[in-house]
Structure formats: C-alpha cells, structure tokens
Image 1 (cartoon, helix red, strand yellow):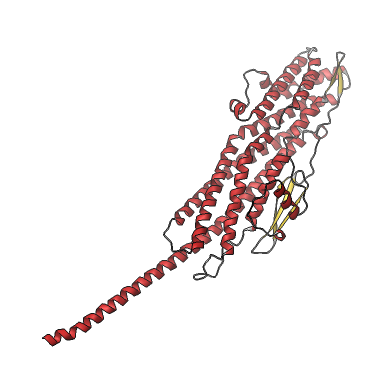
Image 2: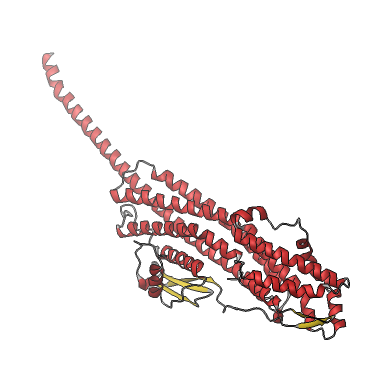
Length: 452
C-alpha cells in the first residue's frame, strides 16, 4: 500500500506541472488575444478616422460652395442696381436666391456640426478603452481626440454666431431690395423731357415705392433692432440712417404725387444729407466679419492642430501591418490647404482684399509676415499652388497623396470687381427747382459695397 502511494506522487506532480503549463499557455493566449484585440481596435479607429477625415474636408468644401453661391447672388443683386442695366425683377430674384442659400447653408452647417459631435463622441469613447498600445499610439489617440474636440467647439461657436447675425444679413437684403424700389421709381425720370412728363412720372409710379412707407413710421424697427443696437452698433447705425432717408424719400414722393410741389426741393436735400452720412457708415457685413475673426482664428488653429496630429501618425507609421497591409490617414494636404484658406480669409477680413500673390511660396511668406500662419505646421511647398486676382477670389491647390494629382478649390467670385455702379446723373426741373439725382449714385455705390 505504501509503495502504491509512492508511485502515485510523480503522477500528481506531473499533472500539476501540466496544469501550470496549461495555465501559462492560456495566459499567453489571453495576453496575445488582448494584444491582437488592441491592434484590431486601433486599426478600426484608424479606418473610422480616415472616413471622418474625408468627411471633414468635404464639409469644408461644401461650406465654400455655399458661401460662393451666396456671394455671387449678392454681387449680382448689387450689380443689377446699375441704372444702365437695372431690373427690379432680377434684383429681387437674386436677393431671394441669396436668402435661400443662406438659410440652406445654416441647415447644412447644423447637420455637419451634429455629425462632427457624434463622431467626436464615438472617438472619445474609443479613446477610453483600456487598450494595449505603444507610447506613440497612445499619444496619437489622445492628441487626435483633443484636437477634434477643440475643433468641434470652435465650429459650434461659429454656428451660433452665424445664427445670431442672421438678422443683420436679412436687413441688408431688405435695404438692397428697397433701394431697388427707389431706383425703379426714379428711373422713368431719365426719359422725362418736360415738366408735365416729370409730374406725370412722379404721380403714375408712386406705387413702386410702397415698400418704403414702413420707414416713415416712427414705430418701425428693423429685425432684431434692439439687440443690434448693443451688439452690432455699426450695423444699427447704418440701418437707422436708411430708415431715416427711406422714410424721408417716401414722404416727399408721396407729397409730390398728391400735387405738393414744395416737396421737390426736399428730394435733393434728402439725397445730399444722406450722402454726407454715408462717410460714417460702416458696411454691416464688414462688422460681422470683424467680430467673427476670433472664432475664425480658432477654427484655423484647431484645424492645424488636427493636421499636425495626422502628420505624427503618418511619420511614425502607427498603423500596424500585423492584421492588414493598408495604411490609413494618408491624405493630409487637403487639411493643410484648408488651414491656409482660413489664413487667407483672415487677411481679407483685415485688409478687405485677398493676397495678390501668384505662387504658394509668396502666399506662405505673406501669411507668415502678417501672423496668419500656424507655427509648427509642416508642408512641402511643391504640393501646393495659389493664385488670386487680389480682390474678389483666390484659388488654392493641393496634391492628393493617393492620386498624386493637384486638386483645387476656389473661394470668392472669379469675375472682375465692379467698383462703381452709379450712373444716374439726370437733372430735371420742376416748378423752377432743379433736381439733381446724382446723389442716388452714392446710395447705389454704398449698396454695391455689400457685395464681396
């Protein structure tokens, strides 16, 4: 019996040894599986980021396209006020299209922002998983999450600002339309040759200035006027000046249409008075651009931080080849081009024109000289192109790292700027009073400044 026990002990020891080996094997399998899972999770994250990267730049290009449509319609509306080519119908058509495009752009911006917030939330959740990653991979996940969160916040602030200033934009469109009504009323005077024809023109066309009647009422207020008076004082001042002049024009024209010839002298006085006030009136849209500058700068800087993070990813070849031979997040020139475009936009906000540089090298020097560049952002000058008329548009090109081709986008209007739209110089005589409507030129030219 004792011998049997002695013989069994080696067997027990062998089983314990085997059990230990099995446990070690299972532990190694678990560790290996955990490592493989971490690699798989990081690779999946990279794939999602590549999709999100393209969506981010697509959203940027869609914003440019929407802004170009808005600016083009606004430009055409202002251009249609030129007396030699005037068409009230065309003016209102362009203004309606402008308003529609603006509203559509806000809706698209909100959707893009919601998508960005959703993607950032998913990325934030993924970054908190206890994955077995290298030091560089951990840094990348942390940095990409931080940069996109900051970019999302900057975008959210920009969207909120766009919603806030919508009344300024709407009021500008209203002023352009009502300027068209005033011009539509006065243009028939161009062909009036006798005092009787002048009187008839004043009377028969009175209905054309019906939209100006509201300005003659003391109780009338522009959209969100009370808010504008405190937050956007320059815009408020411009709108208040238009309320005064349009109201005065309406009452004088109404008197003339009813046979009160004493109003004739007032017309020129109104025009001259408004002409003097124009020098102190800032373009409301310029005020908006100026107040948007801090947010635009934040968008530029956070976009640059995002691009720097992708550079770190590519330079360190962080995508593991253990489970796939594909390399993700290769396209980063497009993001750098977007950063440069925001720099050009800030230049235009400050100087009211685009850099007139003809090469990207010159543009980079200009942006650096005026502190619109982002330090630490790496780029190859040969991968980018730039051209501009120095006034209304610029084109930026970037090398697609996958196709090797240069792709371009345009910001602004590629037509030559029309500096002066005024051509109304008719002088008519009514009851021995000479009426020079040349002051209408100043009104039209000021409206023309609303266009980019």
